Length: 390
Image 1 (tube, rainbow, N blue to C red):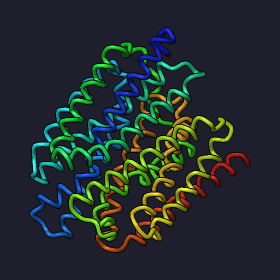
Image 2 (image 1 turned 90 degrees about the vertical axis):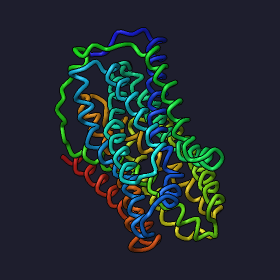
Image 3 (image 1 turned 180 degrees about the vertical axis):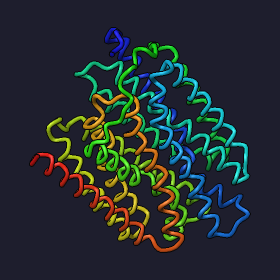
């Protein structure tokens, strides 16, 4: 049941929810650029053990978020979504602020895990968007929400790198805490309250083949977007950069591919007609797989950055395209199931990168991601062909 909200007020609410999700995604990902450098600096462990700690601290919380996302979606039938969203938002900000004042790696990991459980609450925002939006505006509003998530996810690392390089490692945590507070205030003022009885959609997930492939596509796209920051110190060392110069270069690289990801996500999702969603999803995934393989052949920081910008420019569009294609008509739990793929990818990306690199090479890592992408796309296209034949 849609809430009866006038169009202008509905837009303010949708924009505020999207901005709130931008703040939450920013907070969740701002550590991705400087955290590997920080862990290397404070770690009492060997280089090999430290690489594994980086993967755990940067990636394991996302698996917790993936598991929690459907649970948060199901809670929209028991609690008022707005109040639930605000509570999780505030709690996440407090946990994140505490992370800025510890250099103990086990404790840091514990705080990241709690943050992961709270981060899965982004599902509530998706559900509120689907409730507020009229049918003809749903796709556009979901795209706005997804693009806000992607923008926060991608802008966080370069801003974090800049703040850490110029103001110290605690500054990104404090800045993010303030940002989340501002976003929370916008949400409190402009988002209309919803009674829990108004969200009583079916909480069952119809695990059709299409939904499963939608989940897989979001997973592989998020791996593309998130695998790189955890291994950037190693890559930049190969280009002859270390220390503060490497940290600043990491920020510039991330800023570059953030711009193309946001532009690509917005333009491709807006220009793609509904009837062509599946075909466009396949094309952009295959293009991203090609650019992923080409990363190995880059000769320096500039060529590496250009290829990475092209890669993220196409793959970022998969997230809003898949959500638009599969999420319509799902209840809170179903939307949470699709959203869990984003968090799973955020966990798999850095863990895969650090684990493979610790035991093998960049070539193996790049080819693994490319082959997995092609495999998922081919299986997705085959499933569509079988469905049409039936």
